[in-house]
Image (tube, rainbow over all chains, first blue to last red; front, side, top):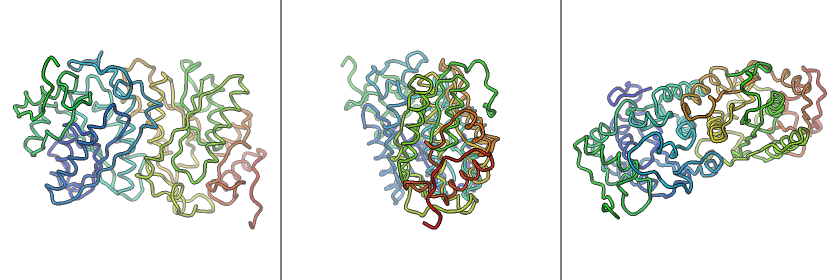
Amino acid sequence: MIDHCAQLPGVTYGGKCVVVLSGGMDSATLLHLVVRYHMTPIAVSFNYGQKHRKELDFARQQVINLGERMSTVYEHKIIDVTALTAHISKSALTSDMPVPEGHYAADNMKQTVVPNRNMIMMSIAAGIAVNENAVAVATGVHAGDHFVYPDCRPQFVHDLEATIKSGNEGFGHPALFVYAPFLHKGKEEIAKIGDSLGVDYSTTWSCYNGREMHCGVCGTCVERKEAFSLADVSDPTVYEPVGR
Amino acid sequence: MIDHCAQLPGVTYGGKCVVVLSGGMDSATLLHLVVRYHMTPIAVSFNYGQKHRKELDFARQQVINLGERMSTVYEHKIIDVTALTAHISKSALTSDMPVPEGHYAADNMKQTVVPNRNMIMMSIAAGIAVNENAVAVATGVHAGDHFVYPDCRPQFVHDLEATIKSGNEGFGHPALFVYAPFLHKGKEEIAKIGDSLGVDYSTTWSCYNGREMHCGVCGTCVERKEAFSLADVSDPTVYEPVGR
């Protein structure tokens, strides 16, 4: 597992890396970092019955923009997993439950969990990686999510990598590793790294609501604002006026 | 991980168990064993773009028959993952490649592998298990598949369970375990166990080809015949006449 930003072994240079891309700021930064470290990204986004498609459209835009910047075209797969989520979800992100507002905290944010979501997405990403002879699967999990989400914690990422390795051993491709460069970093550090890489955060979407602008009050909006503020990076996001 | 047939902790009695059911003889036996050990099965089958639906129809039949025998109705979910397999598969089981014939061996059977298939299916099963407050997810992997398929080996099942546990820690449900009672058993032992449990193997389907009868010559048919023969259990399968 690679959990630092500047600690890639030489062997990965030039290899393919399957990047789970949500359309938010963490995975957008991840995508740029993968390219920065000379891996060729295969971006994978999941349509899991989100209340809105905005984040998928932003994900698409990021892949196109970064490709143009690098004078190439990167692959982007959008995979429809709505047939799964009907069976496994009671989450506010895919149901009619109201989206919780305010700062992230265990009590109100647990309802945003789709059970085992990261394991499902990373398993599919790993299947693609084997098929594509890639060297890595990348995830934007970060330290800010550890408290609420067990499938964003170091132990999970460690176990996940072991499972991917043992489940695909000996099939002639390089041993896959999990690239999780933000595993021990907070969101404000991600904003700093992204700023240094030239990530255009105006084409990222965080808000759980899918209105024209970021609402500014849901859990992810609060975190997003805070990250830019703590990182001392200019926030390009247009938020809805207070008191709307 | 529970990898023996008669080693279930008391805590599981009466709990729900998500059973990955293919329609073949291994998972049919597994389903009966789960019920035998007083767990309530939630059967899950995957439509991953198999060349034929026969095994899904047989899976459905097994759940109905066992429910009737136990004077109840068990849940059976058939989950369509064809949107995934287009992205991850070069396998003979989902493509136009010819199905390899003869006994299982690394060279001809590797092409039947859908990359990371067991991890993907078990991840989804675990998501359902969390949602349903189940105590276990069950898989029919057995020792006969170890040689060719890394995702049927003990190390993989061990790592898989660790990942499921760490990824879903602290969500108020019991710690999920992976029930893999055939992990160290061959197919002939499965046939013996199933025979003792009264499994009706005439409603199971093994053949990779989807014709009216089992072809008798593809890898799984050869294994199926051999299992019954070695177990000294009567084989109810109708095979195509030799020389067809």
